[in-house]
Image (cartoon, rainbow, N blue to C red; front, top):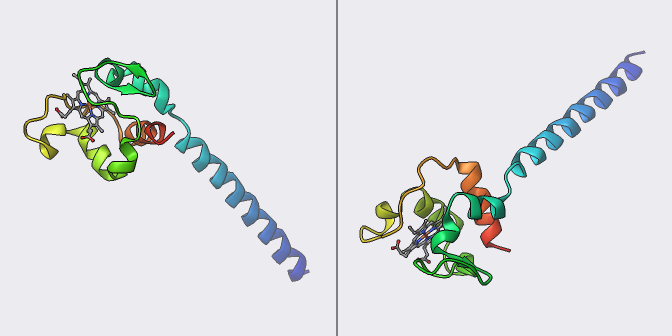
Length: 107
Ligand code: HEC
């Protein structure tokens, strides 16, 4: 009897684990970095893969030169990284949104 109970319990735990991983995977893909890049205004100043503005540097391949955390910080508050920056801060963008943008820049 206890053997059956044990295996039922394992089965249940396995189900919960599956559910949790599905939820977590869903959260991390909630934002589309490409859409954000164009909708929040990065593309007004930056080009990626030939599309966008020219005031800022072309960001194609920027993830090869800079670390994810550096870019995350730069988007949040450029002047904290580079006091002469002409880019404005995007403090309203959540970490998840900035992560999605960095993921897009890697493509
Ligand atoms: C008003 C124009 C403008 C907007 C909007 C803008 N940037 Fe910038 N960005 C710049 C300029 C100009 C630079 C060059 C260095 C500086 O002045 O900060 C720069 C630099 C950067 C850099 C550093 C590049 C490097 O390797 O030194 C990154 C990364 C970056 N921007 C990402 C973004 C992202 C992502 C967004 C949207 C959330 C964005 N920028 C929006 C103008 C802008």
